[in-house]
Image: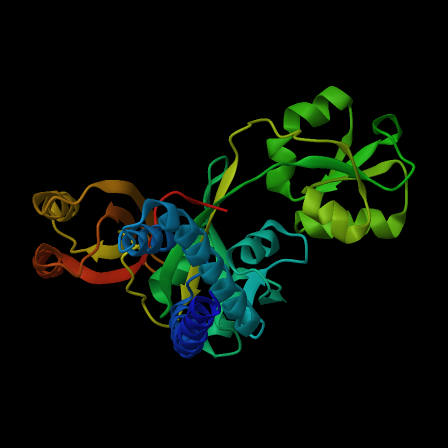
Length: 362
């Protein structure tokens, strides 16, 4: 009996020694993955990739009982790998526009947990900080389901050098916030960003509140906290209430329950990843009859489905426009390259602005 026990322990010691070496090798590979994701502005968490790893690796285990334990083991191993990458990410500098508690601040934190979020006064300052190397990535809004596109960000992407390496959807919930001890009945005036005031117009009218505009929702909350006036309320997020020590007097007061903002992650280099399956194209067409129709026809010719098409006025060129298009698929395939070659014949300027995973909720 002791011989069998000794033999089992010898096997375990030998395997553990091998596993220790392999574990170190795997964590070194995790460092390489992190460096890649940092360079291209990709989030550490990649659920689709993890599902594929679990499925592929567990198929190597034939014993059905052991397979269940192996799945738990590989899940824990990937959780450890993520934790290690998050530790390395503490130095990742993420630029956003607004004050702590603004929706861009919230989005940046959900996309890049434990990162170093840096506040800038406006979109261009946040964008330029990445161009100058002061920040690693920028998280900026590009569209709101209630108010439409964020033209300033779209213009920066068109004219600048950064690439989109992800688009993420943040569902926006507006709430009435007040200082401790206040109630809804105490509130006489509310302050917030004009867009938030518009989203909550019906509620404000119903309550009979006066409204005052602020630069953003976070600054509105900060003002209410500093004034410490029971009659003054802010319209902002729950996260913002926590940051500035306010309490939620009434939740989800925005007019539409479907209020989502899409945020783009921008970095210096275009990422290539199998999970980024959609692309953004931006172009101007030649000043000839049918040029736009020709461009759209070329995209359809190669089997690409357009999921968004918007026009934006060109700066310094009155009554001239550029176009922003989102398509299903990437351009690094043979058909994609042929499409780009043909588009260059009808476009004055063509930019592959980046790639992203569609419907990525945060």
